[in-house]
Length: 138
Ligand code: ZN
Image 1 (cartoon, helix red, strand yellow):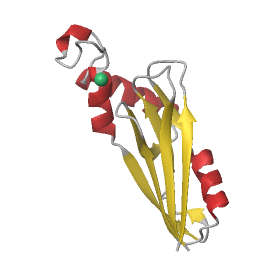
Image 2 (spheres, rainbow, N blue to C red; image 1 turned 180 degrees about the vertical axis):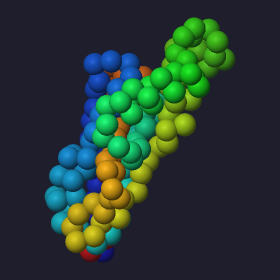
Image 3 (cartoon, rainbow, N blue to C red; image 1 turned 45 degrees about the vertical axis):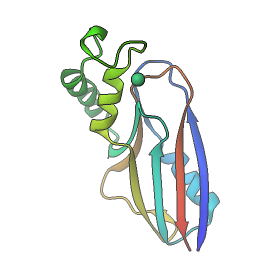
Image 4 (tube, protein in one colour; image 1 turned 90 degrees about the vertical axis):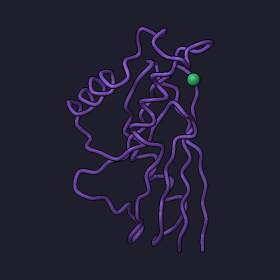
């Protein structure tokens, strides 16, 4: 069995952002040489998410407004976590949107459903954060 590991690094210009990272994951898969197996992609930070959904900008604005209703960033004082930090909302948003995704690899390609793409969601950005890509298979 082959095993491949790669870290991707992101530093967004804004506190929150949604990035389509499918091309970087496909590049990692090509480097791995794996044709049949599994590809795990996970955020390595507790205020960012990796999830799969549609690459449609209206939907991304809908995620943003929905998450702001569930866990509004401000006022920072509404959260017990925000003593020395101001990112409690980012922890909550990350929990809702998830830590990772797993995609099957078939014939050397990510075996997506219709319109599926992999996204990195940043909820406390403007600093460097890592995403792990782990690929196993033959
Ligand atoms: Zn925190």
